[in-house]
Length: 116
Image (cartoon, rainbow, N blue to C red; front, side):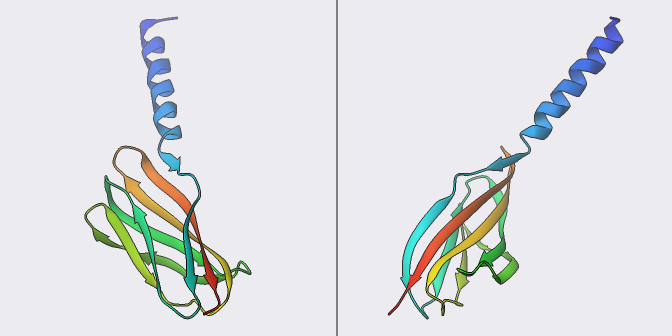
């Protein structure tokens, strides 16, 4: 193999390796239980993100409550005030952010709404 082909092969390998690491998936999480009809602060921490967004919040029956919303940033924390808590059960919100060390990071986070 010529030197140029070897360099090209190494470059392609590095590109593929970086591309695979460009998306990180964090473990699913649960932020606890809250009372029906009370607002819930949905949160995410990311020390090296300039933004974190919520792609969707799902009701317990898997229908979409809200989608494509930005979370507010304070230091390394991001929050969103969710006030559509009129159905009891487990909700899921899906976040994504631009981690400077890991590329785009995603996470599914659960919370439970209970009767008053």
